Amino acid sequence: MGFWAALGILSFSNNNRKHWRFILEILCLLPNFLPPIFILLATLNIVDPFPMGVIGIVFIHTLMNFGLVAVLLAGIIETKVGGVIELAYVEGASRFAFLGKGLVPMIKKDLWLIALFIFVVCFGSFAVPLVVGGGKGTTVEVLIYEKIRLSSDWSNAVLLAFLQSVFIFSLSLIASRGKGTHRTRLANLNLIRMPTGIFVVIGISLLYLAGYAQGFVAGIGMISTFYDVQSAILWNFLGSLSVGLSVGILCYLGLMAIAFCWPKRWFEKFLNGYVAPSTSLACFSLLLLGSNEGVWPFIKIPLALTLLSLNSLFRMGWDGELQSLHSQMTVAYAMGASPKQIFKEILFPQISSRAGILAGIASIWACGDFAVSRILAHQDISVAMMTETLMSSYRLNQATVLSLLIVIAGLICFAACVGGSRVLRRKFTS
Image 1 (cartoon, helix red, strand yellow):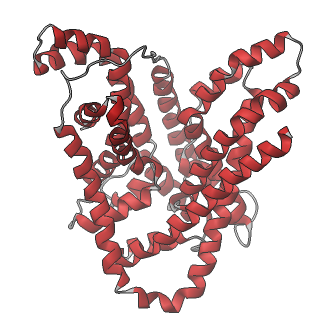
Image 2 (cartoon, helix red, strand yellow; image 1 turned 90 degrees about the horizontal axis):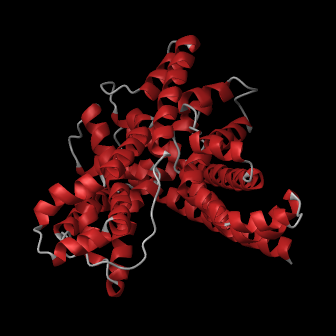
Image 3 (cartoon, helix red, strand yellow; image 1 turned 45 degrees about the vertical axis):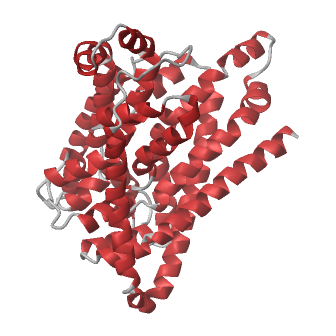
């Protein structure tokens, strides 16, 4: 599906139609940037009865990740084989003959690397199997959760987490060997453009958008059921803001710490091979530290989410941002500047805004988290947890309405992170 959609995206590769391509790419990437709870709600609202178990898990992950694959493949095809496609078009090659005998063999390695990347993402997923597994689709993450929560079997849980981490780490090392190329000019891609791929993107986007809208409209008629829990909703909304802002601040500091240590080659190699720990094991390890009442969940949950998010943020462009400044850092070192001077005068002014955006994305994820919070908190302390509670009791329409508060909290946290990063940049560079 990602390959098909990629050929549709490439239908808008001309400069005068770039805005249409931008819209398509937003539709493709939206499920990856939104917390999983929105895709779960939208799908459960429109697919009734929903196939719980492995089939349901695969279905949700396909909806969430096909767009990311499409955008990645479109970029690879355009940059790596655009000239060859144009030449084949001029020589009169047929579309399907070129796709089978030319395009696919030329990007075969990239297809494998993308497949490994998506496999790693889905293999380590916890939130999706927890909701739609239905006891029939127990993944490694859910098994670790059950070993600790239900059986208190820490030895087997730690062993499973270790084997999972080694396995994912090995795949990450393979995937990190891929290298991109740079496009020198626009190529004529008429040979492989497939407008039907556009309908794949629009059709699937309409599927989850219609599902969410259907649940929201139906839930509006039941809004009176929230009157008795107005106080709880208010406190949980404040809890979502607290968790989101805390994660945003911690991720911002973490990204800056990475930037400060970046010139060291061993550190770069470590980050390229670093794999986020098992969600269940990381959460239960924090559960054993200190109390789990009062304000402690508001400390432990942001710590856990930061630990689990930094790896994704690093691979979402932070590494490329630092690499682009490598030549400036090299010149500064040659002129005798200290690491502290380089960070303050070269790195920080140029990367603060980008760090704020990435930290804002992490804060949106945190506002929509329910899986990590469910382990570290014994009661609902956020809107996402209340929403998941309603989902578990099959009150999907009310859950859909309540999820609107997650969007509001996420936008507030995102704006705070972006605005705060810009204020810090102006303050420290003035």
